[in-house]
Image: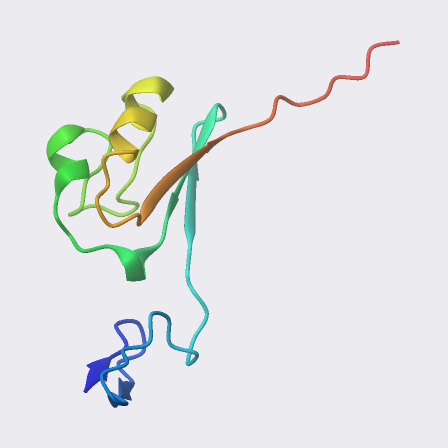
Length: 103
């Protein structure tokens, strides 16, 4: 038996096959931005290794909500720490600069 983490729906093994993504729900993502970069968190992929919180405890604060605060560190440091996430639950993208119409 395999249990879907977000909805707790049970799936039975079929000849040793374990589904990688159940079809019972959509994948939830949370976005946190500081204007320069956006950190994307996919909670169902998180394995709670704590690497993010041990590396940048002022940014990744699991006991608080929201648990990610991008203001205490610079974007390059945050991006480097996000890339260390072993499960792939954390990712980041650089925000496009706002187009200013200059006439």
